[in-house]
Length: 137
Image (tube, rainbow, N blue to C red; front, side, top):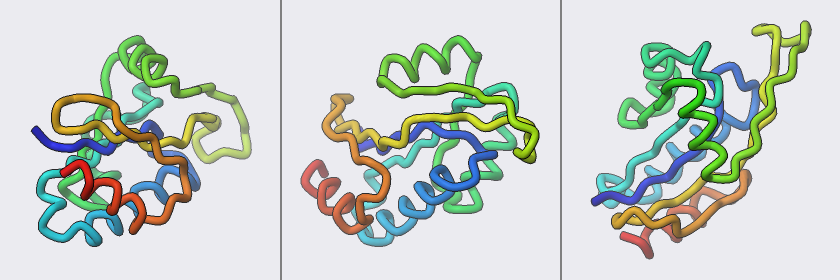
């Protein structure tokens, strides 16, 4: 019954993932009381590292009401494919984790009836995202 804003990322991401969650905090602030009807969801593309507890701490730094989801690696891969999210792990010794994960940067907006309605590219201003969400609420 809620509108869902869904993003695929990982907690060791150095840039896009934390920036997206920061944008979500601004979207939530822009929505005011309407934000009660929106669920912001971060789905890991690194389930081997991002445990439920790790995800909860990570997303909780931005907003404790945000959801962090993980699952079996095959399940996560299938859901990412279903949304058309590109995901590729690249080993790299310069990374603190020893690897980077290249992944899509769209945020998917699902209406209260479960229909995919929008996909926002990274960098859309939070006030524009809030405006789109208001139309769905």
